[in-house]
Image 1 (tube, rainbow, N blue to C red):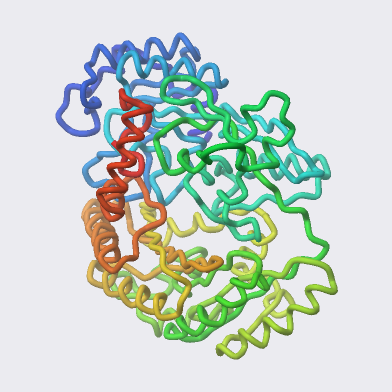
Image 2 (cartoon, rainbow, N blue to C red):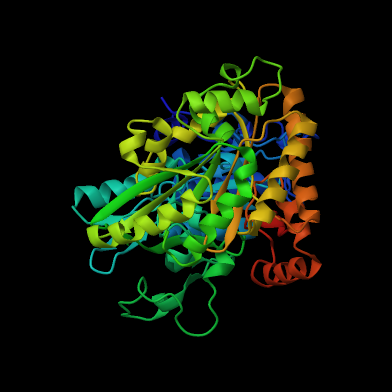
Length: 539
């Protein structure tokens, strides 16, 4: 039985005040209370929360809280361990929990489903927090097939939303991130995640939020505050300052409803892969693809995947090179060729009618072939699992293939995403690739990475894969990650998103004025600092 099912059924065990106190007096972070919170405060908060949601949905003893403390990112000092968890079912219960948090000065860490694998899962950025798990708030409140919009709660998963569309024969597509079946559209959008269809920039296609503020009042953004409005999910801006962005990657409120735009299913969908055979082809690929993206001839955010990343999805490292041996390019190239892959494999799709796809395809083929790439379709790739994986994602389909990354270096399952941003220029990608390989080589890790080519930007998605069951390797991974963040930052390549293990470090790179402004807002709307202290480096 899964941890989710154990939690849902209450079989892990209800919170017991006596058990909740176990370990709290210890000096390590696993039992550390939040600053200014006493044992009596914590016990009082747990008791009060139980009166709101029931014993079954409050967890305060170390064993019961373990599922919320599981992380794949490096955490050698056990810093990212929650003290408790509470699972409300309604927005009214969320409001009551926020009031309790303020009364006892007990910080709470809101999550949607907590399945952001390489960014910290459900664990908080700082010690002493109670996870506010919104997975029970999982209603699809509205889908408008004509407008292509929906309104959902944070516990809704991509799988649930897709099933709803399929079951009701609604010809709309969702846009998914990696491991979409178990992830939340609300959670991914609030962290400004990306996907694979033309609707892949998720925050761009968000429209309207309901937010519980730190004082427990409810704010509806955009047109949501207008009584009788029919445009809450149709018009993003409303009137006056646009505030939705303040609730992304922040701790300024708790989003309990969110509107989204969904993509109409096109008459024709045709996926492609461009295969390049050399690691040095990076700048040529970017220079060929950028004008196609800027002009929207290629409408979706496409992924340019290194062979090592691709192989790590379905293979173990010791299938490529013996244990203890560096992952050299010659061995990777040999394994890639044996599996129908190049050293770089770039995926994109065409969407439209028979006529539009037929007209655009020759233009794109000519541009990408000139870069030295081999343009391939389903006709050539057949049942190749890597092609199938991306072809599925680019039409809003779901799979869990990339969980295979956790097996690359053993059963320990260590993964931390590092995602620096650059302009979509070949020289920038070439420089980032070179620097990343130098740092990873220095610390003894592999370059398993991809580039997400946006309209004008690059997200360099580096998967730091290690064996978390090996304490020494976890320490090395932690040092490597810190090195990546700081060294790339000095070059002007800061992360667009990061995990709980590095939120403070990344925030420092965006400058003191930026940090002071965030702090000013935080102090104004959350004077007790009860919502997610440390989120995105905002105390």
